[in-house]
Length: 303
Ligand SMILES: CC(C)=CCC/C(C)=C/COP(=O)(O)OP(=O)(O)O
Image 1 (tube, rainbow, N blue to C red):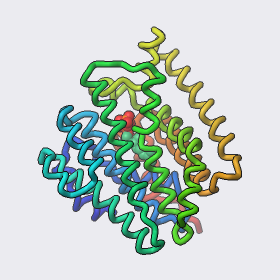
Image 2: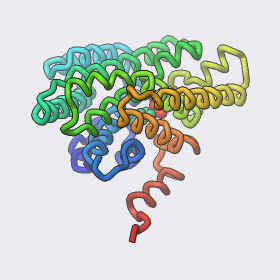
Image 3: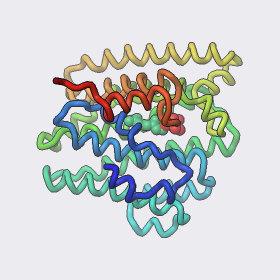
Image 4: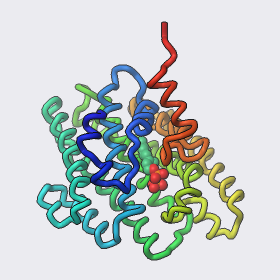
């Protein structure tokens, strides 16, 4: 994975973006830790790495007209579309396309299923949601909390991560019918993604606001209701508790495949863990570094 990441060379080609391979691996370890899901952990880490570069491009680097071009190119989903993009966007677009196409090709070879429309759809939804936030930022517009969350449960990457986790954990069991049963989990994916977004905002929005980013749930609620930051944080914590109840309710539904239940609950748990002491991803220090060292570099010996 390190070789893949180094060869993409975003450190120099997209120096504005976060270089967080290990931290991104923590997400995938939290979402599917079982030994048989090694391929899923690799795929999910790649997904989060590419997502993070694209997120930084929309949040802090790209001009609005450039971002509109990138969003259009994602909708087109073909290599010719990259010709219309600014130079710095081309390697990012290529990385996303190659990663998505390779995953779809592998599944087609092994299972005879065309999953490209599903994969493409998640990237289109994600970039369209980033675009909405970029327009708000450039227009100096602060949405209401409801308006913000309607977009932000997608822009956190939860639905995209859950589709990738599903495709990568199913192995030979992935069929046309199981792809359809994925849709039964859509409410659960929604609540788990909302929970991830709210935890992310509780942990990161202060630093993001200071470096210049779109208003997050806390600022939206403060402005809408004219309340203090503390009151807004308490309100968001209440929404997190509510989302957990909804997730538990959805998880108990027999129509939802167990693998979706597991990865959704695990994503919400991982978000709690990563953001409970602040921004666990934005910097490579503190609790996240200690966790990476004790989980990966110096794990507790099992025997
Ligand atoms: C498995 C999943 C869901 C991974 C997503 C990782 C993530 C939240 C990246 C963006 O962080 P951010 O705090 O910069 O996000 P934003 O800019 O959207 O607030």
